[in-house]
Length: 238
Length: 368
Ligand SMILES: Nc1ncnc2c1ncn2[C@@H]1O[C@H](COP(=O)(O)OP(=O)(O)O)[C@@H](O)[C@H]1O
Ligand SMILES: [Mg+2]
Image (cartoon, rainbow over all chains, first blue to last red; front, side, top):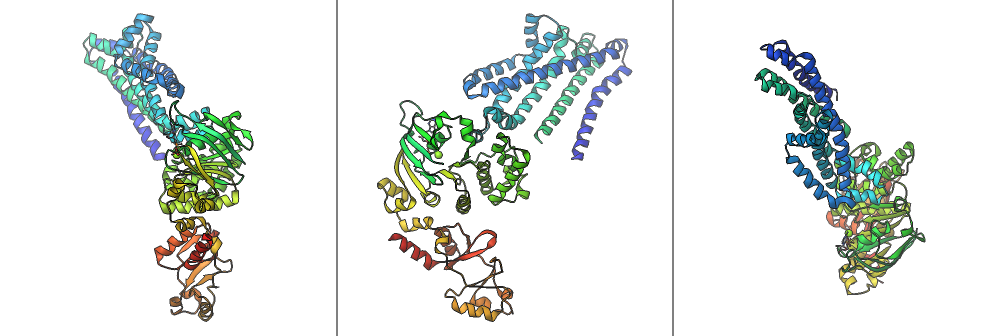
């Protein structure tokens, strides 16, 4: 039990060390003035914050909508629309994230809220699909037993269906989380900031050190957030 | 709790043959009505119409003279115990939480729920300390089935619906649980609708048996009437001949018990020998003051060295519980190649002896 938390803390500490330490080192040792300008500490912090906020807003809303919609289409009276919804979700998934961003820029213009909006739409799909899959794979015998004993539909959802579908739903949320961290690096193209800004600058001024910094920060952030979600999932099931 | 089914009909798809066809049936208070018939004859459908998991196409169901179609389905179901074949235990909940399902829906206070869970676990023969916090996946099939029964009994409903509750168990466990359930039923006296496709189980568990075929009621009778006057060829085939053997399921060992010859483990061997001479079976049982069965004394054990009965007695095997049927007793005898079986009740209390002769006599009496 304590051992478990020690292990988890160490793992988180390592990921945090990479997320903070790698840019720190590069800020302290810039190859030249161009890199130094690209890695002004206040900018790096700002981009990191942007990225976290983009992720946080998108994953929260995507989870709320995805889980709700997944539950809805798994209800017997709506199940007939489920194949259509899941198919649209699957097709939507094949649109590259930059494409999603472009579509929403066309609709809503540039800026932070457009980026959040696009990330939400992008992130809903895996959550919706997994929620639906988790709900419909519960053994019919279990649902029938709960109905037969007199549980209300709400009780069945709360006490039986959601807990049983939880591992599949959280797997969807984690997939979505990783996707959002990745896609959020593109937010810079519509002037919404994020770690993508460092990468794009690095590419345009042709400085490896810059875009490695941005890339490593984004990657370690994705893994860190995924790991934290995993811990929440484990604890929710215990 | 009296249940009446009146001209009950269920047609799932327009144009299909009815799954249940104009069924009329009355179950009296305290009766166990067994619906029996080949697979697909409409037993489950009939049962599920009682708690409104399925709505009838036509006809009425009255529970205690109230038309169930006019009742709130949730309220109706909370008052009906429900056990299904695959048990339907919730895998993510502990045994205690599983059993507490209905009391929690009824918002009983925590303390009351805990006490009830422990009481029910003891009732179905599982130690609350050991089982309360386990998960269904930690249990054997037989144990899970007991939890299924305990869960259905949690809010003490007057009516129980049981759909092949012992269907998935091996024959020995099944017979054991059947006996145990009969013993529990003797105390709790529920009105029960019990579904099975196994005619032997029907004869054993039912006070009334409803034989169904293609959705129709073929015969509704007590097990005895069924065996002595089957309504038609279909019933005869279902019973499958061999009526004497079937009767073995019908008679309980309690009905033909013989008083055993007993000694105390403290008695001397000479005293035991005296008792032995009176026993035609050459079988003497050692019991303590509270009639707990301690040992078995045979002529060969009396030839052993020792002073007291306790020194020479053998471990008693060949026991059946007091709810057992003659069939159970006979199968114990055949397995061990002996002509007797010991009947023990709660806490291993000796109740008597069943002999092969007594079984044969009982069957002959019954034929007349
Ligand atoms: N939900 C359903 N939809 C359509 N047909 C059903 C449904 N449930 C049962 N049936 C049909 O009704 C008949 C009786 O089924 P059932 O009551 O389950 O039989 P039993 O329990 O006696 O084996 C069968 O022919 C079965 O296929
Ligand atoms: Mg059935």
